[in-house]
Image (cartoon, rainbow, N blue to C red; front, side, top):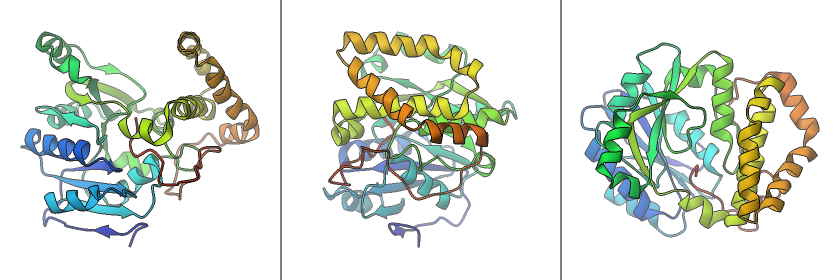
Length: 318
Protein backbone atom coordinates (compact mmCIF):
# COMPACT_ATOMS: atom_id res chain seq x y z
CA UNK A 1 0.00 0.00 0.00
CA UNK A 2 1.26 3.44 -0.87
CA UNK A 3 0.83 6.42 1.46
CA UNK A 4 -2.80 7.45 1.85
CA UNK A 5 -4.20 4.18 0.50
CA UNK A 6 -5.34 3.45 -3.03
CA UNK A 7 -8.03 1.73 -5.00
CA UNK A 8 -6.63 0.01 -8.06
CA UNK A 9 -8.69 -0.82 -11.16
CA UNK A 10 -6.31 -2.11 -13.79
CA UNK A 11 -7.01 -3.01 -17.38
CA UNK A 12 -5.45 -6.22 -18.68
CA UNK A 13 -3.47 -4.45 -21.38
CA UNK A 14 -0.72 -2.02 -20.49
CA UNK A 15 -1.84 1.55 -21.29
CA UNK A 16 0.10 3.74 -23.69
CA UNK A 17 -0.37 6.77 -21.44
CA UNK A 18 -0.97 7.44 -17.76
CA UNK A 19 -2.92 10.64 -17.12
CA UNK A 20 -2.56 11.92 -13.55
CA UNK A 21 -5.04 14.37 -12.01
CA UNK A 22 -5.11 15.79 -8.48
CA UNK A 23 -8.36 16.65 -6.71
CA UNK A 24 -8.89 18.73 -3.61
CA UNK A 25 -12.47 19.67 -2.78
CA UNK A 26 -13.12 20.39 -6.47
CA UNK A 27 -15.75 17.96 -7.75
CA UNK A 28 -17.02 20.22 -10.56
CA UNK A 29 -13.64 21.09 -12.07
CA UNK A 30 -12.28 17.55 -11.74
CA UNK A 31 -15.40 15.96 -13.22
CA UNK A 32 -15.30 18.31 -16.21
CA UNK A 33 -11.60 17.65 -16.74
CA UNK A 34 -12.14 13.88 -16.77
CA UNK A 35 -15.09 14.14 -19.13
CA UNK A 36 -13.06 16.28 -21.54
CA UNK A 37 -10.31 13.64 -21.56
CA UNK A 38 -12.79 10.85 -22.25
CA UNK A 39 -14.38 12.86 -25.05
CA UNK A 40 -11.20 14.07 -26.75
CA UNK A 41 -8.80 11.11 -26.39
CA UNK A 42 -10.49 8.37 -28.44
CA UNK A 43 -7.52 6.81 -30.22
CA UNK A 44 -5.09 6.20 -27.34
CA UNK A 45 -5.13 3.47 -24.73
CA UNK A 46 -4.77 5.37 -21.46
CA UNK A 47 -5.40 5.10 -17.75
CA UNK A 48 -6.46 7.96 -15.49
CA UNK A 49 -4.95 8.07 -12.01
CA UNK A 50 -6.82 10.38 -9.67
CA UNK A 51 -4.97 11.45 -6.53
CA UNK A 52 -7.33 12.91 -3.95
CA UNK A 53 -5.41 15.25 -1.68
CA UNK A 54 -7.44 14.96 1.53
CA UNK A 55 -10.78 16.29 0.26
CA UNK A 56 -13.39 16.87 2.97
CA UNK A 57 -16.36 17.81 0.77
CA UNK A 58 -17.29 14.34 -0.48
CA UNK A 59 -15.89 15.07 -3.94
CA UNK A 60 -13.67 11.99 -3.96
CA UNK A 61 -16.57 9.69 -3.13
CA UNK A 62 -18.73 11.28 -5.83
CA UNK A 63 -15.96 10.97 -8.42
CA UNK A 64 -15.28 7.36 -7.47
CA UNK A 65 -18.95 6.53 -7.95
CA UNK A 66 -19.18 8.39 -11.26
CA UNK A 67 -15.86 7.11 -12.70
CA UNK A 68 -15.32 3.55 -11.39
CA UNK A 69 -12.78 2.85 -14.14
CA UNK A 70 -10.25 5.32 -12.67
CA UNK A 71 -7.36 4.41 -10.40
CA UNK A 72 -7.81 6.25 -7.08
CA UNK A 73 -5.12 7.20 -4.58
CA UNK A 74 -6.62 8.72 -1.43
CA UNK A 75 -4.53 10.83 0.93
CA UNK A 76 -5.95 11.44 4.38
CA UNK A 77 -4.46 14.95 4.40
CA UNK A 78 -3.36 17.31 1.64
CA UNK A 79 0.34 16.70 1.05
CA UNK A 80 0.69 19.30 -1.68
CA UNK A 81 0.90 19.12 -5.46
CA UNK A 82 4.37 17.67 -6.14
CA UNK A 83 3.95 14.78 -3.70
CA UNK A 84 0.51 13.92 -5.07
CA UNK A 85 1.85 13.90 -8.61
CA UNK A 86 4.79 11.75 -7.55
CA UNK A 87 2.32 9.25 -6.09
CA UNK A 88 0.64 9.07 -9.49
CA UNK A 89 3.97 8.61 -11.23
CA UNK A 90 4.88 5.79 -8.87
CA UNK A 91 1.83 3.63 -9.70
CA UNK A 92 1.61 4.57 -13.40
CA UNK A 93 2.21 2.01 -16.15
CA UNK A 94 2.05 4.03 -19.36
CA UNK A 95 4.90 4.71 -21.76
CA UNK A 96 3.89 8.38 -21.56
CA UNK A 97 3.25 10.19 -18.28
CA UNK A 98 0.70 12.98 -18.49
CA UNK A 99 0.00 15.20 -15.47
CA UNK A 100 -3.00 17.47 -15.99
CA UNK A 101 -4.45 20.22 -13.80
CA UNK A 102 -7.94 19.44 -12.60
CA UNK A 103 -9.10 22.97 -13.52
CA UNK A 104 -8.37 22.37 -17.21
CA UNK A 105 -10.25 21.03 -20.23
CA UNK A 106 -8.46 19.23 -23.04
CA UNK A 107 -9.45 19.67 -26.69
CA UNK A 108 -9.61 17.45 -29.76
CA UNK A 109 -6.49 15.38 -30.55
CA UNK A 110 -4.53 17.04 -27.73
CA UNK A 111 -2.62 13.92 -26.68
CA UNK A 112 -1.97 12.64 -30.21
CA UNK A 113 -0.41 15.97 -31.15
CA UNK A 114 1.79 16.05 -28.04
CA UNK A 115 3.02 12.49 -28.56
CA UNK A 116 3.74 13.14 -32.25
CA UNK A 117 5.97 16.06 -31.28
CA UNK A 118 7.58 14.08 -28.45
CA UNK A 119 8.54 11.26 -30.82
CA UNK A 120 9.80 13.57 -33.58
CA UNK A 121 13.20 14.02 -31.90
CA UNK A 122 14.89 11.74 -29.39
CA UNK A 123 16.26 14.78 -27.56
CA UNK A 124 12.75 16.07 -26.82
CA UNK A 125 12.06 14.73 -23.35
CA UNK A 126 8.92 16.63 -22.44
CA UNK A 127 6.14 18.43 -24.32
CA UNK A 128 3.92 21.02 -22.70
CA UNK A 129 0.37 21.90 -23.66
CA UNK A 130 -0.64 25.23 -25.17
CA UNK A 131 -2.66 26.94 -22.45
CA UNK A 132 -5.55 29.23 -23.38
CA UNK A 133 -8.24 30.91 -21.30
CA UNK A 134 -11.95 30.09 -21.74
CA UNK A 135 -12.39 33.52 -23.34
CA UNK A 136 -9.56 32.91 -25.82
CA UNK A 137 -11.00 29.54 -26.77
CA UNK A 138 -14.23 31.24 -27.86
CA UNK A 139 -12.24 33.19 -30.46
CA UNK A 140 -12.16 30.64 -33.30
CA UNK A 141 -9.86 32.78 -35.44
CA UNK A 142 -7.33 33.06 -32.62
CA UNK A 143 -7.43 29.31 -31.91
CA UNK A 144 -6.87 28.51 -35.57
CA UNK A 145 -3.91 30.90 -35.60
CA UNK A 146 -2.47 29.19 -32.51
CA UNK A 147 -2.92 25.72 -34.03
CA UNK A 148 -1.01 26.76 -37.14
CA UNK A 149 1.82 28.48 -35.26
CA UNK A 150 5.20 26.71 -34.94
CA UNK A 151 6.05 24.71 -31.84
CA UNK A 152 8.56 26.41 -29.57
CA UNK A 153 10.97 25.60 -26.80
CA UNK A 154 9.56 26.69 -23.46
CA UNK A 155 10.71 25.93 -19.95
CA UNK A 156 7.94 25.98 -17.37
CA UNK A 157 4.87 23.84 -18.03
CA UNK A 158 2.47 24.37 -15.12
CA UNK A 159 -0.87 23.23 -16.59
CA UNK A 160 -0.11 19.91 -18.24
CA UNK A 161 2.64 18.09 -20.08
CA UNK A 162 3.57 14.76 -21.66
CA UNK A 163 6.87 13.04 -21.05
CA UNK A 164 8.54 9.76 -21.86
CA UNK A 165 8.73 7.26 -19.01
CA UNK A 166 12.50 7.13 -19.28
CA UNK A 167 12.58 10.73 -18.04
CA UNK A 168 11.32 9.55 -14.66
CA UNK A 169 14.19 7.07 -14.55
CA UNK A 170 16.80 9.67 -15.53
CA UNK A 171 15.56 12.91 -13.95
CA UNK A 172 13.55 11.39 -11.13
CA UNK A 173 10.57 12.81 -9.27
CA UNK A 174 9.45 16.32 -8.45
CA UNK A 175 11.37 17.73 -5.49
CA UNK A 176 9.01 17.60 -2.49
CA UNK A 177 11.73 18.66 -0.05
CA UNK A 178 12.13 22.22 -1.32
CA UNK A 179 9.03 22.88 -3.44
CA UNK A 180 6.09 21.82 -1.30
CA UNK A 181 3.19 22.47 -1.04
CA UNK A 182 3.21 23.93 -4.58
CA UNK A 183 4.99 26.04 -7.22
CA UNK A 184 8.49 25.87 -8.70
CA UNK A 185 8.59 22.08 -8.79
CA UNK A 186 7.99 21.89 -12.53
CA UNK A 187 10.60 24.58 -13.27
CA UNK A 188 13.13 22.72 -11.10
CA UNK A 189 12.33 19.47 -12.94
CA UNK A 190 12.70 21.24 -16.30
CA UNK A 191 16.10 22.64 -15.36
CA UNK A 192 17.29 19.21 -14.26
CA UNK A 193 16.12 17.66 -17.55
CA UNK A 194 17.96 20.33 -19.54
CA UNK A 195 21.21 19.48 -17.76
CA UNK A 196 20.98 16.08 -19.44
CA UNK A 197 20.63 17.75 -22.82
CA UNK A 198 16.88 17.24 -23.27
CA UNK A 199 14.73 19.77 -25.11
CA UNK A 200 11.45 20.97 -23.61
CA UNK A 201 8.80 21.99 -26.12
CA UNK A 202 5.37 23.58 -26.17
CA UNK A 203 2.99 21.98 -28.68
CA UNK A 204 0.84 24.57 -30.44
CA UNK A 205 -1.76 21.99 -31.51
CA UNK A 206 -2.10 20.54 -28.00
CA UNK A 207 -4.58 23.15 -26.76
CA UNK A 208 -5.85 23.03 -23.19
CA UNK A 209 -8.33 25.45 -21.64
CA UNK A 210 -7.23 26.51 -18.16
CA UNK A 211 -9.37 28.16 -15.51
CA UNK A 212 -6.23 29.28 -13.59
CA UNK A 213 -5.14 28.41 -10.06
CA UNK A 214 -8.55 27.71 -8.54
CA UNK A 215 -7.26 25.41 -5.81
CA UNK A 216 -4.11 27.38 -5.07
CA UNK A 217 -5.91 30.68 -4.59
CA UNK A 218 -8.60 29.25 -2.34
CA UNK A 219 -6.09 27.22 -0.32
CA UNK A 220 -3.41 29.84 0.28
CA UNK A 221 -5.07 33.20 -0.21
CA UNK A 222 -3.82 35.71 -2.76
CA UNK A 223 -0.94 37.20 -0.74
CA UNK A 224 0.48 33.87 0.47
CA UNK A 225 0.06 32.44 -3.01
CA UNK A 226 2.07 35.32 -4.50
CA UNK A 227 4.89 34.98 -1.95
CA UNK A 228 5.12 31.22 -2.33
CA UNK A 229 5.04 31.37 -6.13
CA UNK A 230 7.92 33.85 -6.26
CA UNK A 231 9.89 32.15 -3.48
CA UNK A 232 9.87 28.82 -5.25
CA UNK A 233 10.30 30.23 -8.75
CA UNK A 234 13.51 32.00 -7.70
CA UNK A 235 14.65 28.99 -5.71
CA UNK A 236 14.40 26.73 -8.77
CA UNK A 237 16.71 29.11 -10.64
CA UNK A 238 19.20 29.49 -7.80
CA UNK A 239 19.42 25.72 -7.34
CA UNK A 240 20.09 24.90 -10.97
CA UNK A 241 21.37 27.77 -13.11
CA UNK A 242 24.90 29.00 -13.71
CA UNK A 243 25.65 32.69 -13.20
CA UNK A 244 25.45 33.28 -16.94
CA UNK A 245 22.09 31.54 -17.17
CA UNK A 246 20.77 33.50 -14.20
CA UNK A 247 21.69 36.76 -15.91
CA UNK A 248 19.45 35.82 -18.85
CA UNK A 249 16.48 35.75 -16.48
CA UNK A 250 17.16 39.23 -15.06
CA UNK A 251 14.88 41.05 -17.56
CA UNK A 252 12.00 38.72 -16.73
CA UNK A 253 12.54 39.13 -13.00
CA UNK A 254 12.71 42.88 -13.51
CA UNK A 255 9.35 42.84 -15.27
CA UNK A 256 7.87 40.88 -12.36
CA UNK A 257 9.23 43.54 -9.99
CA UNK A 258 7.73 46.38 -12.06
CA UNK A 259 4.35 44.65 -12.17
CA UNK A 260 4.48 44.01 -8.42
CA UNK A 261 4.92 47.76 -7.86
CA UNK A 262 1.91 48.51 -10.05
CA UNK A 263 -0.13 45.90 -8.17
CA UNK A 264 1.11 47.16 -4.77
CA UNK A 265 2.77 43.81 -4.07
CA UNK A 266 6.42 44.86 -4.11
CA UNK A 267 6.87 44.23 -0.38
CA UNK A 268 5.50 40.72 -0.87
CA UNK A 269 8.02 40.18 -3.68
CA UNK A 270 10.83 41.34 -1.40
CA UNK A 271 9.60 38.83 1.17
CA UNK A 272 10.03 36.04 -1.37
CA UNK A 273 13.59 37.20 -2.04
CA UNK A 274 14.28 37.32 1.70
CA UNK A 275 13.01 33.74 2.07
CA UNK A 276 15.72 32.60 -0.32
CA UNK A 277 18.40 34.81 1.18
CA UNK A 278 17.79 33.18 4.57
CA UNK A 279 18.42 29.80 2.93
CA UNK A 280 21.71 30.78 1.28
CA UNK A 281 23.55 27.83 2.85
CA UNK A 282 20.99 25.38 1.45
CA UNK A 283 21.14 27.07 -1.96
CA UNK A 284 24.95 26.86 -2.09
CA UNK A 285 24.84 23.21 -1.03
CA UNK A 286 22.29 22.31 -3.72
CA UNK A 287 24.27 24.20 -6.38
CA UNK A 288 27.41 22.24 -5.52
CA UNK A 289 25.50 18.98 -5.94
CA UNK A 290 24.79 19.76 -9.60
CA UNK A 291 21.47 18.11 -8.86
CA UNK A 292 19.65 16.00 -11.44
CA UNK A 293 18.03 12.82 -10.14
CA UNK A 294 15.63 13.31 -7.21
CA UNK A 295 14.16 10.17 -5.58
CA UNK A 296 10.65 9.80 -4.21
CA UNK A 297 10.47 11.60 -0.85
CA UNK A 298 7.90 12.58 1.74
CA UNK A 299 6.97 16.28 1.52
CA UNK A 300 8.57 19.01 3.62
CA UNK A 301 6.63 22.27 3.41
CA UNK A 302 8.43 25.57 2.94
CA UNK A 303 8.14 27.73 6.11
CA UNK A 304 5.95 29.61 6.88
CA UNK A 305 3.55 27.74 4.62
CA UNK A 306 2.78 25.00 7.09
CA UNK A 307 -0.70 26.17 7.94
CA UNK A 308 -2.69 25.46 11.07
CA UNK A 309 -5.10 23.41 8.99
CA UNK A 310 -2.88 21.14 6.93
CA UNK A 311 -5.81 20.46 4.62
CA UNK A 312 -5.72 24.11 3.61
CA UNK A 313 -3.03 23.55 1.00
CA UNK A 314 -3.08 23.73 -2.75
CA UNK A 315 -4.34 20.81 -4.78
CA UNK A 316 -3.25 21.95 -8.22
CA UNK A 317 -0.06 23.23 -9.77
CA UNK A 318 -1.59 26.62 -10.54
